[in-house]
Image 1: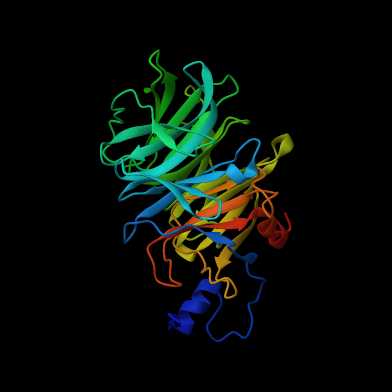
Image 2: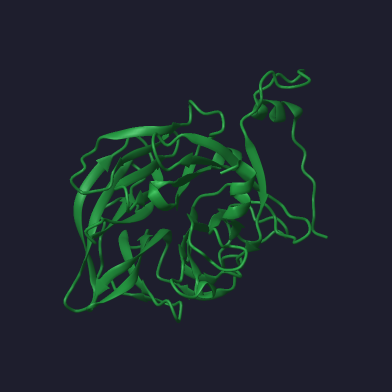
Length: 358
């Protein structure tokens, strides 16, 4: 019920596989693409069209059942879901594009989980605390934290080994600006600009590695870049994944997530929006490419696949039964079964790891 069919040319298929249309089999093995299925999807966002964008994951330190997903509706605000996809809170504070969080920020003499979002309505940094028990957001911005950007877009956070917390926000013109987040005596948070890094074209997705001090930024049509996360790291950068060099990548490069493991090991996950897949790179060494995966529909559960992903997040934290090794969560740009507004879907990391041999 509600299903449909689609027609596409055989030429489209063969071009995607990079083989001649009349060839019976590829001359060489295609890039490794694992197919996985989501086990959970959130309720759709309230607004239609391209509205859902970016998720963050809060892993409760003592009770995995109280873990949560904080996500953006860029036409309406911030959303908090439980791990069953139920909506716990809607915060209609403006057009929030990207969101991230860090625990351990000291505010009012106690450690809190601090959430930052790029507010396109006010061209500002939205700042909240997240209560691990009530799972509710509370604004703690010390007034309007203006960005000075034309359109605050991508966002990620970084907490260094000394305990300082930073936020990066990108502008569509390629500028990425970094702020240090500072607690005020009144229990609020203000942002102090500390660095600008300019890319040639538009960036959005980014993630910082708190342990290694690396910052990864996706320049949508060009590459995934690696540079220093500290404010004095300068502008030097290295391309670890170029669209033109890896057939598994198809621009736009969008969301980026970091799966952290002990000893500096783990994986980077990058949204390859143009071919509805996700490329996986090693966290350590030269960030070698290890394979890609796509999320397809599950007829048994009725959860459709994921396509046209903007934002994603991944965690290695224990999130409960079936999610002992963590999870991957991504925005679904076409929520088609049944046709509904966009939402977010979850895949157990153990499934991805098994299919890619990680």
